Amino acid sequence: MPEMETAVRPVPRARVQAMKEYHPPLGGRDSLRLDFNENTVACSPAVREVLGRISMGDLTRYPEREPIEAVVAAHLGLAAPQVALTNGVDEAIHVLFEAFLEAGDELLLPVPTYTMYEVYASATDARVIAVQAADDLQFPFETLLASITPRTKIIAIANPNSPSGTVATREQILELARRTPHALVLVDEAYFHFHGETVIDLVGTVPNLIVARTFSKAYGLAGLRVGVLAGPVEHMRWIRRVLSPYSVNSLALACLPAALADTAYLDWYVGEVLAARTEFEQALDAAGVRRWPSSANFVLVEIGAPHAEFVRRMHAAGVLVRDRSNDPGCDGRVRITIGTREQMQQAVVALNETMAALHDGQSHGGREVR
Image 1 (cartoon, rainbow, N blue to C red):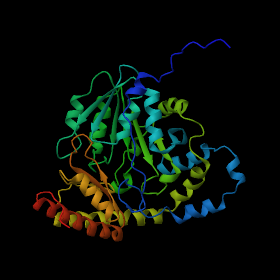
Image 2: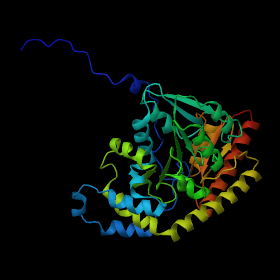
Image 3: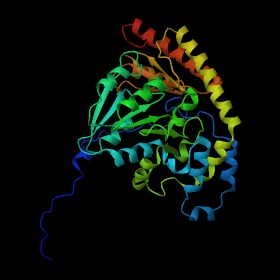
Image 4: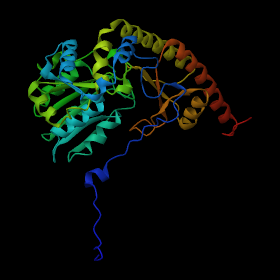
């Protein structure tokens, strides 16, 4: 055979090569999971019952999302064409950006916030405009308003925000939508149940409002990967063109109605977390640890220079927490998920022991004394 000519290797798009990588630290998570804001107990028992009724034959069929979308739409007080189920909120963000962001467009992003907004936007030809919050991490409303340009195409707002737990008010969201008729305002309500305030009732009334929800947090279905995107029918039509018809698996679709119907379980879990959050915040105050007021199922705390050692020691004590020091404006800060009251009592013991050890190490010139 003739010798093959040396070929140029295929390379990905320049945008993909420049994308920020995201590697969630998911390995070795057998300890108390206070690092990813998941439900720390279990999903509804009704979901387990549904899973037990699924046959092997059921798994041979492609999933049908439309009937369950109608159930979810009714639960949210919306019409079925206003709702699309997605493979977690991650896919919702991804398809929204793919559908609407073009070269020359701008995504306004208050930071710090959920990392995947920037990751998915960086795969498009749009420009990410980061709007930094002040040290109090409150929603940077005025700065955001001042950052709006004719090129603004999407404003992404996590509400409550992660990792801060702070919120944008309904009035602020409405004003942003009013000021940007040429753009979409995405409100990601992943932590809605722990905040209790929503703008999903405005979907279809405010023509450029899009709302995302997840069933990974309060509902405890993170492993099934299911979220929802809601918006005006005219926008959802284009989003469905980008959305894979089979991205939400049949197990998730089968379990979702049962999870939605079991309001008693959801109310119990949310109530438990809210009570535990209050008690844990009191424990932080007593320990002299700076914290930010939170409207979500987590609390951001100031650890300072030994933040990595704090995370390591908490893990050694059986409690996983999340170092957020790489987030914009969050150097030295750690996010702690709130679980049940009993779980957070365990976390308080680990916290107090860890802080004492760090203080002892500092008092001995940074050397650990054994």
